[in-house]
Amino acid sequence: MQIGTLNRRTRLGQAGFSMIELLLAGVILVVGMLGIMVLITTAIATNSRSKIDSTATMVAQAVLDQLKATAGTGTGTATLIDCANNSNTIDTSNGGAALLDNGDIDFSEASPPAGFHMDYRVCVGNVQTTYDVRWRLDVLTAGPGGAGQGTYLVTVGAHLKNTGTATTTNLALFALPVTLRALIQTPV
Image (cartoon, rainbow, N blue to C red; front, side, top):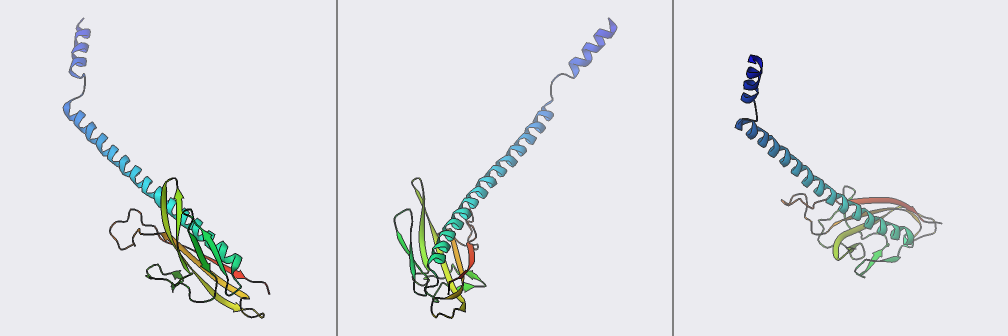
């Protein structure tokens, strides 16, 4: 009986958690939960930027496809209709395009030339977002047949409008502009 009494006293002294152990466990839990909240917030912001980039790429590709279809005439235009039923004219005449800055289209240009810029609206449900789309058509080589023939470098840039620039303080929706380039060779 002596052994059973000693064993019971040892168990009674070690039963439960002390207040310090509970406080330490609580602090570890709070720090872990804050870390998970930061990860979830970062994932949501990254997902939003990916959506903006994907949509800007889709819009730029649509303009590039229209330019490919009508380029080479030297005076051709194409029309692209957005979800708000706005008709946007795409100019494929040579020269007069949006300014280039080190090969990229300059989105800081306040008023780009008409026919080389559009505000394209994308609708998802009841929400409309507007993308600033600009393009440039450069003649690389002139063809023997005269105007409209040859090889062209087409540069198309798009980004979500009114999201600021890299120098603004609110970068929640900031995404770099998407720039696509293609070589177009017109038939002789």
